[in-house]
Image 1 (cartoon, one colour):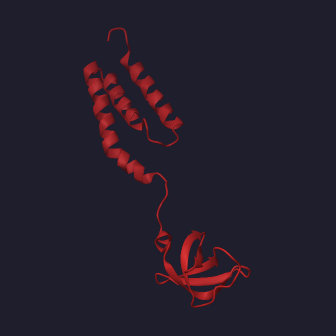
Image 2 (tube, helix red, strand yellow):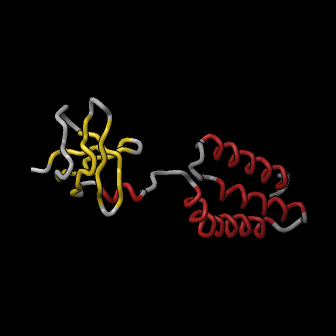
Image 3 (cartoon, helix red, strand yellow):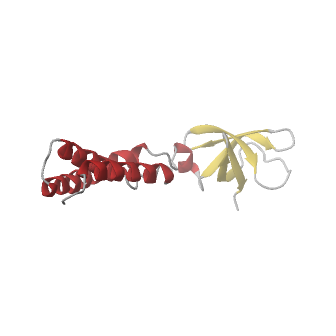
Length: 147
């Protein structure tokens, strides 16, 4: 392209893609094109032909997308399943009477002891009663009576 400074164009594209990446708040949308623009910029600085700059931009961008994206996906925070999820809906045995008013109670479920609270009502659930784990709140299993 006559009269067009490709170094300036690649720098502009690098900045545009970088700003777009920052504005997408970690969505990893245009990071790959930043790498591609940087590689094409290096080629332009070495006076490489325009066709080679374009090929380098495409190849590096696609390679980064295919190789690095899965790695970055693993690093992004998200909902992570825990062993607590495995007891939801399970039958448990009350090992210490569950009294919501006193704030006491414990259950045994899947071989583990959990502090427990009753989901509804204020009646005490006696030791030895079977219950169902409805959900987890903090470190406490919230249970309901087994019907």
